[in-house]
Image 1: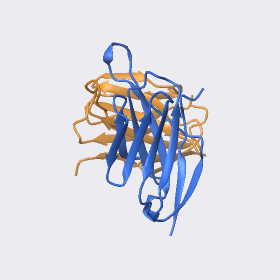
Image 2 (image 1 turned 120 degrees about the vertical axis):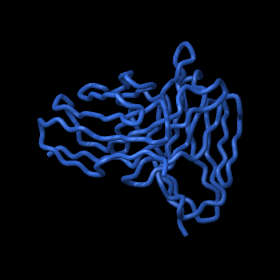
Image 3 (image 1 turned 90 degrees about the vertical axis):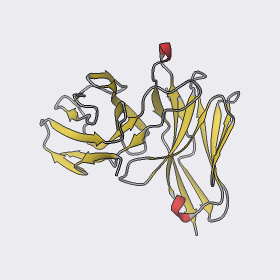
Length: 117
Length: 116
């Protein structure tokens, strides 16, 4: 089956600890993304990567870090510097830059709910 | 400042009737738009998209209309079914300079409830 997997589904951590969220895709997509969703809010972009070994900050990158060593994998580390880490984290992937007039659809994984105690 | 707005947090519709979900945007440079459906504690599922060079796109029960002069798009679901009950997100792509890939900007979502 082709798709995007995120693990674990639920994650609990103590305040002050770093934690890494996994995201893997076997869709052969070039681009991958991390979003955060809070209650009553839309999705906000944390980091994105258009190609292996390259990534860019999104709108709310502070307190987070990523790596893109393999095309299939884009792990997100929530560091102790992130002030409000409890949230629902979503990973997505897409084929890459679209031709003019077409769309580059992002496909999402099932999400990881992180709770910091 | 929100660039993509879904002003109705919730919408309730009777089964079999039409559901109309609205979305407004402020940036005339957005070049395509997407609608996603999301159930609680799950990732969003892509529903339908539309390029800014079109004004309508239809896929089964789902139709998206784009009015560029009004910077408004809407998703029509006909007929509505109880399984359509979910949160619907509107998203817009902001192209970056030089034609490289932009990023999606999401609205806050509208919770649709379809009553049997």
